[in-house]
Length: 64
Image 1 (cartoon, one colour):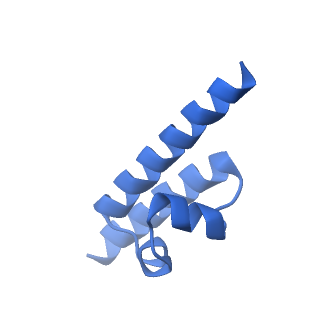
Image 2 (image 1 turned 120 degrees about the horizontal axis):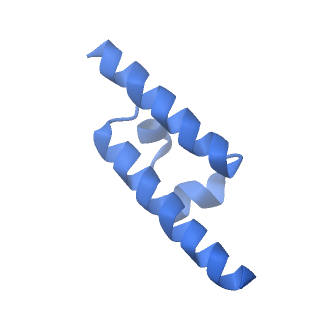
């Protein structure tokens, strides 16, 4: 089980590294709790991916 958590933490860190940081507003918008963020599961990673995708899509619309 610990190996899975470590893999999810690596995945989370890679995703967050792409957006820079994950601040209070990101927690609110993504509906990811601090506890979920610190102990990620597959569901947490899915939420994070969807959040980043939505935010990136929204940002690209504004920049066009």
